Image 1 (cartoon, helix red, strand yellow):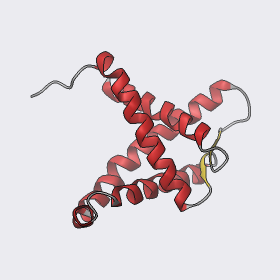
Image 2: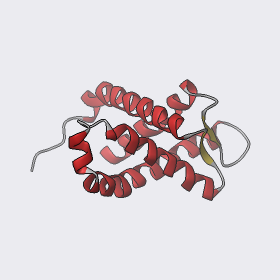
Image 3: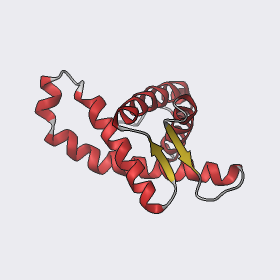
Image 4: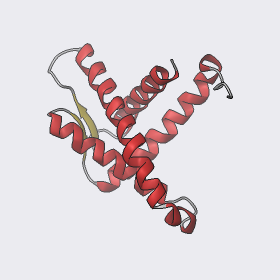
Length: 134
């Protein structure tokens, strides 16, 4: 259940990010048409983002751990921007999805995406509930 809610939070946060940073960060739906195609595109992008963040992001964070310490965590902005560009590249290979104008727009997009998903997560925390300790 938490995975589905997290997926929806990321999809909504990505949608709001593209609204805020339009035309520099945009999403092209997989088919021209209505709202359903656009919503499915955002959900697919949220899945891609989750996989990239979970696999590649964790690997980069482990390898770059000394840089995180040296920069007091500021390198996370660059890493998150890079991960968003990877999502854009993967979705471009599929033929639809996220388009980002440049690396720095990717960094700004990752920052806005992170803040928005954090705020939505705080708002939905009473609904989602705390994770159960084992």
